[in-house]
Image (cartoon, rainbow, N blue to C red):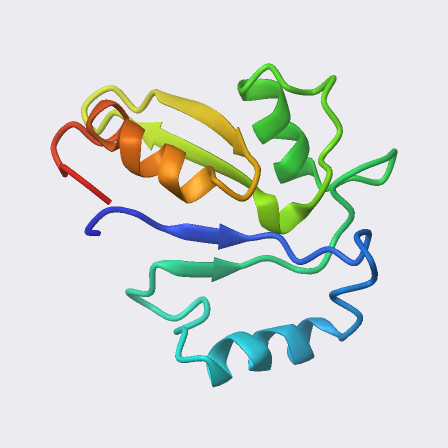
Length: 121
């Protein structure tokens, strides 16, 4: 979908499922056809970081703050999605947090609200 970007937060806090280096994680994504952090790419891969606890990523902390879910621990990074929508004219952003394995279905259902100019996901 045009205008939609994915920002990935690799994290090794959940069953040690991201044990590799940042380079290993990038290669894994690229081997699956993703253009990682390339000009014009819609897939942005951040450096591996914690998303729970005192050393959590500043970007993740901001998403928790904006969605009023700082009190809620992340149970698994793959099952937590944030949708951030920025108004093109005003430069203001809003965000929604969606948890669980049904996250994509929830996002599809809410697409008209979250992306009024785009339609469905």
